[in-house]
Structure formats: structure tokens, C-alpha cells
Amino acid sequence: MSKIFAAYAGISDPGDLISEFDEAKDAQDMEDARIQGKEAQSKIVRSKNEDFLKLTELGDDGLLSIVADGSGSGNAGFQPAGIIANNITKSIKRLYARDKKTLFEHMPIFLEEACLAANEALVAFKIGNEELYGGFASTVTGFLLHRSGNACLFHAGNSRLYFIRDGKILQVTKDQTEGQALLDKGIFKSDEEYYMSAERLRLRNGLGVFADPYVVTGKFVMKQSDVAVLTTDGVHYSINQDAIRDTVLASQSPDQACQLIVEESLKMNAYYKDNITIAVVQYLGGV
Image 1 (cartoon, rainbow, N blue to C red):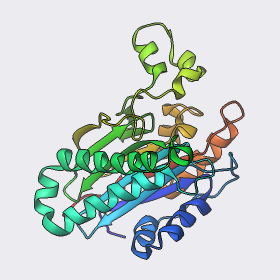
Image 2: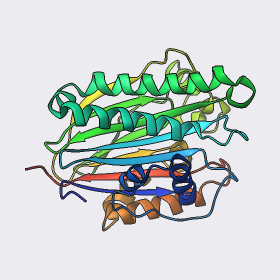
Image 3: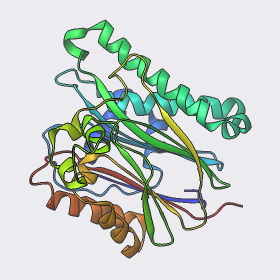
């Protein structure tokens, strides 16, 4: 792994991550996803894992991190979240190989276009076979980080990006759900009411949800020792952001933080059964 990043992943069923790549028969993508990280293994919360995680180093220049939470796969065999993450990654890798300077100078537009192209891939499945793929949809949240610390997020749905600096945590992304809209309007009076509602799961945006989704992008800068955390809703609807922060800060490494957060999420998952996926990326400083 590059000395610029320390990136590790915790997932509720690591076997599904591997089998997705086996289907694709893409050895390079498998190696990219491993990124010398360690998956935190735990019991499966659902019989089928529709979460997907992908971490990809771009030479010595950067890191692309993605979490996606799919739905509607049924017996189709393909996983919407895997289709989304792989398509975005391949688009960015092609751009990097062609002109990395332009890619890192214009991250928002290239990340948005990569997400929209991935959305078209899901829509093509739906058009091709409505019976098998008509329910295909996925959230996606991720970021592209350059070795300089310059970064850009991309987001659609209700997976999340958190940012930790100087002992404080910030939820960077906002859930694009019916429940969040009710919270914004004051109909829900508290975060607790939101988290207990079925509306927190009803997406107002996402890939495969609409033919022309809205992809949020935004630049930010990471300083040495800053930490970025990506989660699917199996994590952040189970434990709050302060618990995530406390666990990351008390851990000896991103690897340990992932394992502990997966374990804590499973303990709190009695009410809300879902797959659990988290990535913790610490920026060690560029050169």
C-alpha cells in the first residue's frame, strides 16, 4: 500500500465481495479492492448481501473509495451495487490512464459523469429484462483523494461520508430520503424519530431509481491524520456518529476501528436488520 493512505474495510459478509469479482473474472479489480486491507469478518445479518465496497489505488497518486447499497437483485444473480461500484471505478481508471493531471484538476465533473454512466448501466439492465432487473437500484457514496490531500466526494442516496479532524466528526453527506425531507420540514422532531421511521429507507434519489439522478459532488481537503469514514445504512442507522468517532479515535489503526464498528453495529442491529459495510481511510500526508 502507498504510504500516503491507510485504508481498511469492515463488511458483514466478505465472501460476497470476493464472489462478485469472481463473476466478473477481473483479477486486477480484485487486487485493487483488497488494497492490502483486512476485511472485518462477522455474522451475516441478512441471507443476501447487497452492499458493495471498492477501494482502488491510482498508482502513487490517489485513492478511489466507494460504498454502495443495492436493492432489487432478487434471483437475478447480478448485484446492482457491484455494477455501480465497478462501473465508476473503471471509468475513473480509464481517465487516470489517459490524463491523470486533468482528472485530478477536474474531479467533480469526472466523478459525476462516472456515476451517471453507471446509472445508465443499471437502466440498461431494467430495460433489457423488466421481470428480472426491474427493481435494480443502489445508493452510492465515495470520494477520490489525491496524494496532495485534495479530494472530492460523490453521493446519491442514503449511504454516508463522515469526516474526522481534531477529535470532531462531521456528517458530510445528507440522506436523500423521504424521512430526511420530513425531518427538514420539522414533521419529524428529532433524529431519533427519523431513525425509527420506515421513511428513512424510501429514497428520493439514487442510481437506478431515476433515469436522470442528481449526483452531489463537493471538494474538500484532507490534512495529515484526518480520517474519512464511509458507511452504508446498516452502520449509521444502528449506531450514531459520536460512537463512530469515539471508536475511530480510540483504535490503534483503521483496521481495528472497522472491526470494532462492525461488531458494535451488529449488537445494535436487533431492530434494524441490514448488511453492514464501512471503510475507514486515514490520510498520512503527501509528498
